[in-house]
Amino acid sequence: MQLATIDWVILAITLLICFAPALFFGRRASKNTSEFFASGRSVPWWLAGLSMVATTFSSDTPNLVTDIVRRNGVAGNWVWWAFVLTGVSTVFFYARLWRRSGVMTDLEFYEVRYSGRAAGVVRGFRAVYLGFFFNCMIMATVNLAACKIAAILFGLERWQTLTFVGLLNVAFAAHSGLWGVLVIDMIQFFIKMTAVIAAAYYALQAPGVGGLDGLITQLSTRTGPGGLDYLAILPDFSNNWELAVAIFIMPVAVQWWAVWYPGAEPGGGSYIAQRMLASKSEKDALGAVLFFNVAHYVLRPWPWILVGLASLIVYPQLSDIQKAFPNLDPKLLGHDIAYPAMLKFLPVGFVGLMVGGLVAANSSTILTHLNWGASYLVHDFYRRFINTEASEDHYVRAGRWATLLLFICSSATVYLLDTAKDAFDIILQVGAGTGLLYLVRWFWWRVNAWCEVVAMVSSFGISMVFLALARSGSPVDTHVALVLTAAFTTVCWVITAYVTAPTDQAVLVDFYRKVRPIGPGWAPIAAVAGAHTVKDKNDSITLGLLGWVAGCSMIWSALFAVGNLLYGRQGYAITLTLTSVVSTAIVVWVMRQQWPDAEEE
Image (cartoon, rainbow, N blue to C red; front, top):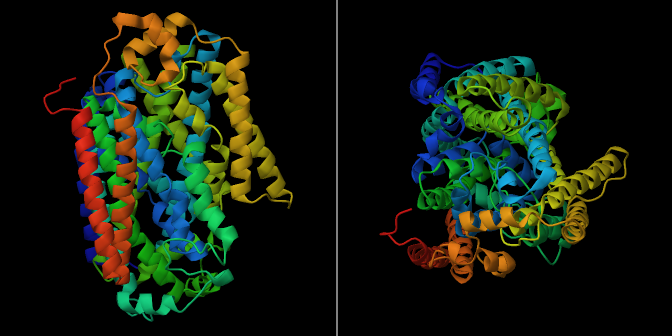
């Protein structure tokens, strides 16, 4: 694809608007690690929320959604729509607890919540495991999508794409710290949304699609393998039970609480926790996470879905994509590449905007992961265990070197992956089984550091067994492996909680007084803490549950109202909209009860 002069101009302006503001934060980021990794704990809710949304809107996300739609129809998206349950639970149960903990990174939590050598072992191990190995896998997934997009649009080799995005992202992440990342994210979100809406509009105008009406009409009479209805928002429970279990029942019943996945961690964590910890108050932390979940699940999915559906008409088979792009590396061919293949229908001018949007999508995610991963490696590993007495300037410089190391290693990992969906499945599988522990540890005093160690080891071990079986030609279905991994891991860490020594009582009392968790799980510690603990009268499990249910209803109803409106089902759309409005009113009421306007932190 050749860019016209106007496209190059628009691309240059887009990149300038995205990245230039971050240059002004270099001096502030260099002050200390609190500024570099946590923005001085002064971020307002709207900026933190926009940054969360932009981070999860990466260059691989449209490819992943297109991959899902082409394989399993619209209903296949329940594999990530189910994480609404996780996100909204973070809003009403965990956001304020994270903010009260006062830690800089979520890994610092381990030595606030636990005691003994195991607490340090968990913190150090997870700093390297998540900050380096797991983080490199995530970034490799994002950059794999960038390579596929660049191969389709410009015929670039992988190393050429990685060199470009590396120079851009490493320079800005190392220079501006979290403040620069947040500002870049905010600007990029609006550019990316404009670009993907344009992509959806012109995909519907592609030859043979016939606009939105033509798309709906054609796919209403076309079925996929096993009678798959591509347009259905819910799977077919009567005729395709196995698929329904895999894409709906398992995600809703098990996956949301059992799997640790960046951006949808049970109980909050990774860069979501980083944004909450950087927020200037508890209310800002809650508002940021709530806004993130609404924008993530309601505003963004349908433009991607429409492109995926249109690609089924333009490129029914993968061979059609290969035929349209004969110079495409066969190793990059997969259903996920249908999204960039549909961009060929963009007119002059919009191509430059779309390329700029895709660069922004890549950068918003990679910048966050570089800063987040560097915070783990420097603050939770290097500073904690290797060099404990250096100056703040030294640790900021170490953070910048860690940023460069992370990108180099993640770029090498790109060559080990094939498709966005395969990488997504690997990430889910390796993170399976530990999620319940991350939910429970805030509300049950008996969970100790060894529970975390055992959960990580058992989850990783059984995941490697399943991956080895798959490589040897005897794969276990993903949803079956997920259940077995979750069950095995949960049994292991619960047994560990009872057979190992509990956390030191003094540490538990200090944690309880600082974080003030609610519920009967802390009753023995509450009795010891006694009158020294100031409890918040607005803390309530009942209110939290009501807000959780209403929040999930608000988001899902709004998401499906948009879908039914696009499908021309006006009655369903109106009913779902009213449901979302009522649910929103309940959410607002719960928030006012828990965080009165006059209350100050």
